[in-house]
Amino acid sequence: MMIFAIDDEPKALRVLCRCVEEAAPGAELRAFDKAADALDAIRTGGLSPDIVFSDIEMPGASGLEFAVALKTASPDTRVVFVTAFSQYALDAFRVRAQGYIMKPLTPELVREELDALPTAPKPQTNRLRVQCFGSFEVFWQGEPLKFARRQTKELLAYLIDRKGAACTSEELVSALWGDSSGRKDAKHGIRNLIGDLRETLKQIGMEDVLIRRGAHIAIRPELLDCDYYRMLAGDMAAVNAFRGEYMSNYSWAELTAGALYFHELT
Image (cartoon, rainbow, N blue to C red; front, side):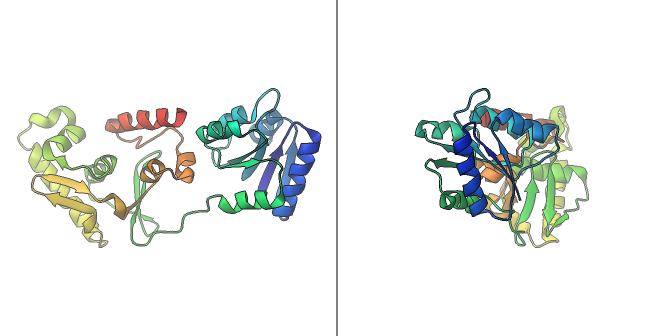
């Protein structure tokens, strides 16, 4: 594990380093008295810290400004702020900081933050794993789920985007085929895709993911391990995994992508 410690005050930096060393004796620790130097070490030095403990109130680039820049330079790095000023707590949350420690600092407080950091999620053997960030992908037991038709996969993507809301055939035709909604065979084509999707899910014992009630169809979100759903639920690991792209292979997903982007900025 690589840890960065940042504080512009020499005494405070020494205390921070001592606490980190006691809390994580096996970690590789790098100390910086300027946030800009830490960023340079990442951008030009090729370093990729797992965790950064940083003061907030610093001359030049503050800890908050550093956290915003870090999200672009090293998106998987976690930030824990260390400060004597409680009024920064809300700002720390807004820049997706993983933790927040009030001074005086102790090894025990550092250890608590280290223990609270998210770990890699355990594989879900009874749920489909769905990747919405970047391009849309579906996995079953660690392997990509195979679809007989490209648009069957897109149909599932659209239902996931709707978060369990019921969709009509007309809505699905409009989303998948746009101005083809007037075609006489359009609804028949959607029925074929729904049947194909149901058969694909049935082959892995996950047909219950689909809900069909009369002319409406939906999915059961609780049966999916989905990065998009976890982000909406406030999972910080999922929040940090979002890098501006959402179902990039589908044009109809641009509205949700824009909403997520502005959600990140607020």
